[in-house]
Length: 125
Image 1 (cartoon, rainbow, N blue to C red):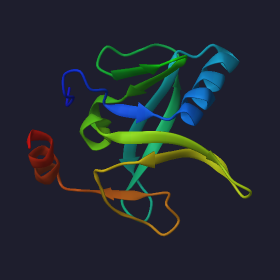
Image 2 (spheres, rainbow, N blue to C red):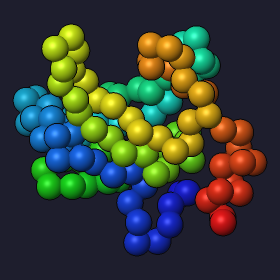
Image 3 (cartoon, rainbow, N blue to C red):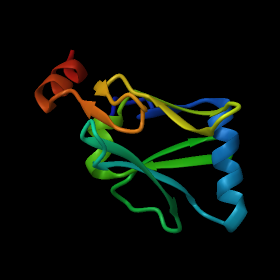
């Protein structure tokens, strides 16, 4: 929907690819759907849900055995994002390196995106 021909909407690191494939295989899911919703102290939060059926309107990104679907309403906010999976002494989880984020809360759980006009101008540049 908001993509550039020949370029995937998001990139997936090898660590994220391995974790997504592991989650898919565990219960036979078709992949993970990534989206955004209102919430958190900065205004928006990422969402991740298991997918049992691929929606025709989702942006599909496949890498190795990993499959990620981007919900239609989130595509313009996630374009250019790198999805990683990190493990540390205190926590493990998916990390999003998103060039469309203008600000984030201190804990890193919620984000604020650049406004729509600014995103469109950057995409068209």
